Image (tube, rainbow, N blue to C red; front, side, top):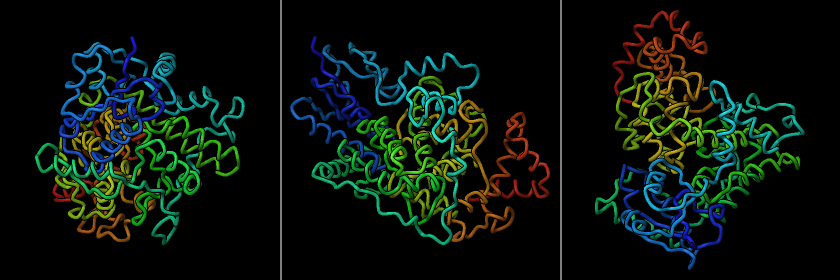
Length: 487
């Protein structure tokens, strides 16, 4: 039987197209399930509609309320295994032929072989090195290029003193067209009719949603920001929301940009002598290492992982300022700018996500399931598969150490070193008690006090917990943070 291929919103590129007839469904119910960032809804709808236009007569394109309206009753469909438990359950409950998943550098079968041969924890570093060897990327024979696997020590520079930005050219931006205009009209109407609950600003679209746009974005990153990506990948500046980051997570997660093509392109810059190895390796590590790793962990850890892990007993509801993206009400300067960036763009780079937003949430015991949902719905690159290991595991340590061996938390000193935020803040990163006490510095000690019984057996936390015992004003700091009102 000639089958029609059903494609989902993460499968919108040529890598998912083998030339046959296609079925693409825009289901409005997807956008009404939870409160969603307007920019995220715009990106998804724009990507779906641009793909329908590209495929032309080869695609059946339906704009309906639910997938079931189009799918139920059909027996002629095939699908490349989709990217969430919900979607996989949907297609498996119907007579649809399932093809192996695509869009990642390591296949599910290859990961299963690797994981099956491991004893103990499935460390990202081990997975990354195995993938380097298997693919030959950044390898010189059996050895890693340059003689080292990891160049993190070269990629931790503070931002330049006195700088407002990194001084790099503006990134390439897509040019909106009539499809984007139609998306805005529809989102306005759906919101007015109460069909969706959107939050955040809808500025001109900043992220690639087609293969052609994605290639232009990749070319621009390689030409203008790759060399600075490594040194400043952990740095933050108030006046530079993109820094030297690639902005490629959206097109990769939409399926319009092949991650293998991305890492091959970047690695070729090192081979040609046009980019430093530290920057190239750091970027390849993020895409071929961490991105693939969290995809495979999503399936390996199981459907219940997100809801069944709360190692630190965190139960505080997300504050209104997070839910409504109300940065204006946040006093802590670094958190204000991070949430303001999410409000404006539906995006923040990884240090803002981990060491500002995630760190704040960890210190205050926000419910990790709520936080995972928030990251998925508020970020333009948020997907059900990408966030659990990042949020539940790495950021909130809610899994007790399955993904990361220790909680990712710090006081204000780290933020002061890696950003320009503290100079303009009413709080002082060196102060933990009193009206100028930095909520990250004081919050760090209050978190350790609360979590100490759970973390006592973690050897990587021995030094911080010893410091907590020596803290002369421990009780006062803990009491102060318990009473702190507002952000």
